[in-house]
Length: 274
Image (cartoon, rainbow, N blue to C red; front, side, top):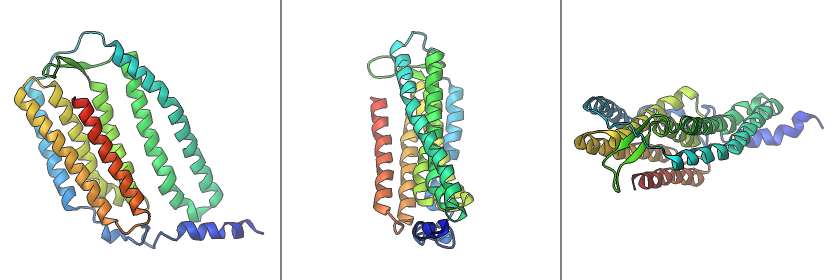
């Protein structure tokens, strides 16, 4: 039997959910507007937070932490080493995706790229980012560290590298979960729809950093409010996106993944603030 005949059922099954517009489950590009009311809220939040960060930083931040933190450095070392097998596995998955594109032909190339290659690339970026910042903290003995002088239980160190990692890693994770619903749309449509929440998540992470290093109690309180508000707005935008695509295939599974991500962010924030 010819190779094309063997692939015919697979091609028909895999490409069935995608309509002429490139969308999945019959959802057209017109039904996914690039600017929504949640996107507008995200843009307004980002502009306001940007100016608050400028003013708050000009007020002043706390002094550098000078005491050695062996536990945190040891934690970064262990975390960096445990990421190695994850990076290898994701890189292998990425290579397999490119091989599948070559083997399955042009009919499935776009589908495989959206559903596997793109997700593997973004997940690998998260791992590399986490590993890079962990390696920096490990080798630079903490790197740039400030003091949270108002922390409950006494002063504690605040690692700049961790917030740098989160400011890029959180938007990347938001993008990965958004691509559950937008993965088969053109990239420009995805970016226009996702960019408001990605920018907002970037700024709310830095608002969290200012909330623990500012020398002003007023600035700390305002920054903490903006941080929590930003996380809420970004989560609302993700849920709004999911609702727009509630008729797509495997919606229950996709909304479960988004809910897990939002719950993990909340738990992590609670543990960090404690």
